[in-house]
Amino acid sequence: MTDTMAQPAPQSAAESAVQSGRLRRRLLLAVPLVVLAGGGAAFYAMLQGMRSGSFDPRGIPSPLIGHPIPDFALPALPPAQGFSSADVREAVRDGPLLINFFASWCVPCVVEAPVLMGLKTRGVRIWGVSYKDKPEASTEFLARRGDPYQRVAQDAPGRVAIDFGLYGVPETYFIDKSGIVRWRWAGPLTDDVVQEQLGRLLKTYS
Image 1 (cartoon, rainbow, N blue to C red):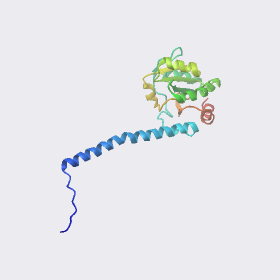
Image 2: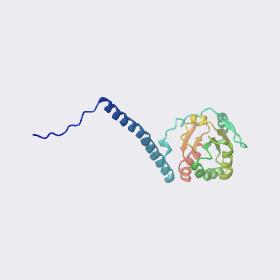
Image 3: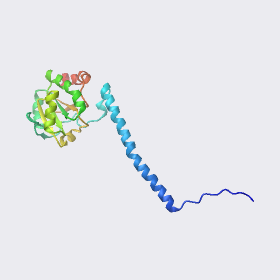
């Protein structure tokens, strides 16, 4: 008698459907993990670039470069004076200024604070926008880290930031005498950025 190997019983349609459903669920569960890992790697790379000075905001396109600032009106962060786009256009007649978005919860803003104070001592005009922050928290932040701003407004909902195309905080915009955005820096300003880029802009447009 010849031995024959037992053949596996063919899967029923119901069993195949169950296995396919399990596979789909596993794939769906894996997608968020892949996205999270990719986003975490990109964020880590950005932080490393900021620390080393190699992070280039020009890699993040800004639709405002070469165009007028968007129309807006923001309330004040007491006791400072708020401002609008009309106030900016009026002010730049006397020379360019910087609009800097910041927040008390922003760790890179702490790194940037002494650089902004240094610009203030050089006579550079800086107007600040408190982004999605509590007024008392922003006020305490400026009291502790120094207040480099001539005017400080609040953008609690973040709507004006959207119009500016804000990538994150801190972020700085250079506005020339015509009210045109000539430069945007995404991330904290550093001494190297001030010397190599902002310094040239101030000489060109002052």
